[in-house]
Amino acid sequence: MEGIKELYETYERRIFRYLYGLTLDFYKAEELTQETFFQVLKSFYRFRGDCHVSTWIYKIARNVFREYSRKNKITAISIDDNLSEIMDDDGPEEAFERKESSRLVKSVLMKIPEKQREVLWLREWQELSYEEIAGITEHTVSWVKVNIHRGRLEFKKFYYEGGDADEQISL
Image 1 (cartoon, rainbow, N blue to C red):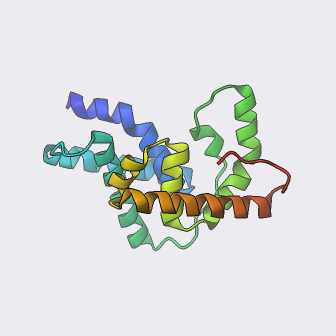
Image 2 (image 1 turned 180 degrees about the horizontal axis):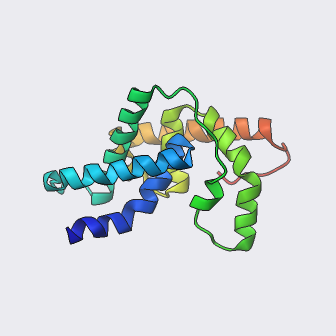
């Protein structure tokens, strides 16, 4: 049981941020995070060790999200005011900047197709490698790179439509 507690303490925040990136809803992400770790608990004995434990947990989270989406037929993603709360606080300036742009970022993310939003979120906000993302999504590294590239292009396109075209973005 100590191993599961350690997994939860190590990965809970990352999984929450991942699920938040898929749902853009603070409360749904919390609920799905809890369900993810419930599934981890139920299937812990089946972990074979053929991938990194983080990849295994992300796969479970992805399956929990897919199941939730299928059952609830998600057609629109709700926006809440908690994006700045889930990001790591580096300092007051960064927190201020995040808060200022969070509404625009959330509205832009809502416009990006789900598969591109997922891999873009994993790469840019979760800082996972292409290989880790490929393992989580069960696609090739090439597929991941292509969809991250497409996601970045879509993000920039929608960002500049909703924001000041003179602003620079670091994606």
